[in-house]
Image 1: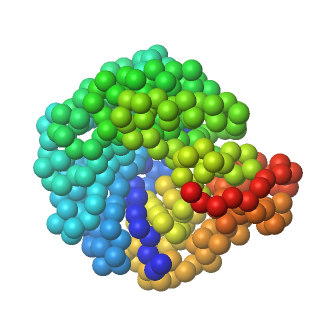
Image 2 (image 1 turned 135 degrees about the horizontal axis):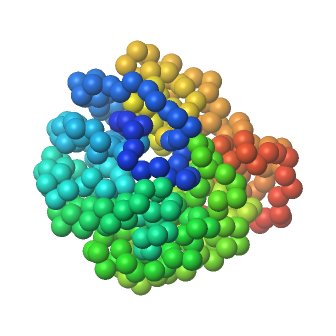
Amino acid sequence: MSAPLRVDLILTYRCNNDCIHCYSSSPRETEELSTEDWKRVLKIFHGLGVPQVTFTGGEPTLREDLVDLVSEAQKLGMVSGIVTNGTLLSDDLSRRLVEAGLDYAQITLESKDPEVHDSITGVRGSWERTVRGIKNMVSTGVYVSVNSTLLKMNSPTILDTIRFVAELGVHGYSLNRVIYSGRATLDMEPSFEEMINIITEAKELAIELDLDFTWYGVTRYCEMDPISMGLGLKFCSACSINLAVEPDGTVIPCQSHYLKLGNILRDRWMDIWYSKECLSIREAAYIGDACKSCPLLSFCRGGCPLEAEVRSYPFKPPEVEPHELP
């Protein structure tokens, strides 16, 4: 591969929520590219053969040119989506985004319980605005999924949240782990045993309610094996399947790993893609000795490099048995 399959375009680090676990905190104030510069970025990635872009943030709907950028991606024949908290998705904006060519929207709802959701987002009244945004986007007919981060605070409400969003008419529901960047701390998420039980129940319920279910978490397979759980192959895809671009054009491995690889508007693409930093992540050079002889390494690739930084090696993994992909 000479380019990723998806690029996450971080249009802004501004946000109207203040989430307790946000990986975009610790404050990241940068200059933001102009509309024309973002269009140049889209054309560059289109020329490299990248088929898909996701507009994200921060909160991408704070950019007044979001509709224009979605339209540009559509003209280039690229699949485009947004990752948003949904609070600013008015009926008019939702309609204009879809008319411009938006292919999907992922909207964050942390809980069916307004108090739990607002406690996580740090903004009172955000639950009501997010739910209204979900309804507005669903009414357009575009593919809508709801995502929650699996936290100790919301884990007791996950099943009720799935039932709730199914009633709203969304097409999919996803869960992701805490990403160890920004404000996130190790004590925010349930234990692996608890996560396995919650995810298993969540998947079964989602399927029962005719929702697509996705688990986005990256784990060491010796601690939680997504393949045996029927969740598919999960590994760190930074610098391989996906990359991210910060608001000023800086390329980073993913939208939560702030390692500067170069600038998409100033540097040669091959210098970015084959930089020692990108190669290090692509080749999983961050793994510890305990992982190197593991029979699951080709699937697992040692988990998330950001987690490896906060859960220091060496660690003694449990015994695992090799298995084939289903």
